[in-house]
Image (cartoon, rainbow, N blue to C red):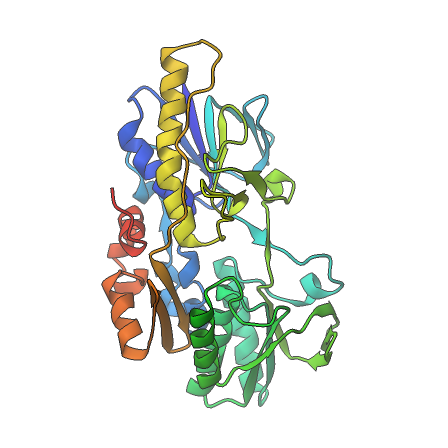
Length: 379
């Protein structure tokens, strides 16, 4: 019997870590990932200003798992009916149970010129490219960096660039564009307000209620006029992975996308047991993985122990966030329950919950343990 986990991101790491201990020893547990490394995605923005962190935000998956077999390959297609994974090299992998944790890709929404002219921030080479463009601006005497999209990734990127400009004593303006009326629009109001205050403190030019329509090599066209730029970063949304046709799969609270296939993390649009749409976030992904692991275990047991044609009852997930945390340049905003913290208090929370993998380069090697600590995930 074979169980495959597709993707070595947050959901894939936690899920596989749990399955190593819970699946029968004769089950072949395979992780398929296109890089063979776990990327600490929510710390990626730091590499823009501090490239020395690059080695600390990637962890070889072979060092994370004890039992699972890691296959470095790009997933091209998942045939849920045939229970077969097609790989980009032309080979395929059959499975009895699969968990699709492929994450999401940057969405450009068909906006002319945006993908051609903007840098995303999804992988280490993206951070390196953004840094090079910033350094070129500094060397040329200054200019304007525009960040499109004020979700948490955009907020962190804009804050990091503003702090970078201040440290370099450079005449670089950072402009943050957001289509909706607030920054961090998916989050609670008090948290949003505190994030906006931190962006203002860092000197970011925040423009909300602005819709991007296209980009040329000199300007970003919006419904509020053209915005001239010298460097352009796009964090304006996500789409599903290419292996799922670019779509995020709609799943309910048990993550089932077929009798033998689960989809979770950012690759899915999850509606939880209470009917709430679950936000795409690292903390949601690791919590989903805890429930998904039990559901994989249930499916495996059902396949091994009975063949009555009835689908087993799977556990249902309920989203429950312990709070939110975001870095804005040298500042931090934390929400714990109803309380929003900034400054030293927020930094204390950040340290207390293990919110930075970068506390020690050695410690990051225990990626699964750190994820559990950081996001308050009990065994």
